[in-house]
Length: 195
Image: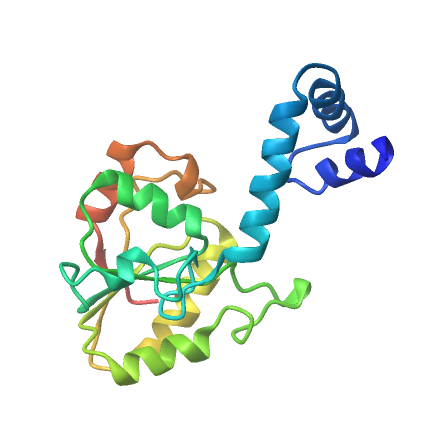
């Protein structure tokens, strides 16, 4: 049982065998109640959290709170790689549009293509909605840039402005690790993206 618990913790990013072992022994020796709460919270989340049918972020409801909010504009669509990127942007309190979550980036070597990122859903969204601006907020990595370029080429067939968040974020940096002011500056300083 202890070994399977160690292996379960090792499935988390950045958690190796030693760290997993420390987690397990801490919970078993010092915090069984915390371990039971963790187990219950994990089971609840795995059973009830799904993807928003509109933007693909994680949500307990079919439509997430951001997509359901009528005070947010439908004319801006910010494309991000992960739900944690939405959280980072929302903390800046600058952006008032909607989102689309790719849940990754283009990586043919890893078998991740346009279909795995939901780009067909994005194209349908552009056909059906009055999107005036797409904000490309993929990470400033090679994969993020390739993904942004692909989306930019796809969106050129629509009458839509394509912008890229300003690079107040360092090359190789990721949104979830940036501070609030950097994200706010990057969003307000975005510019047209030519691909």
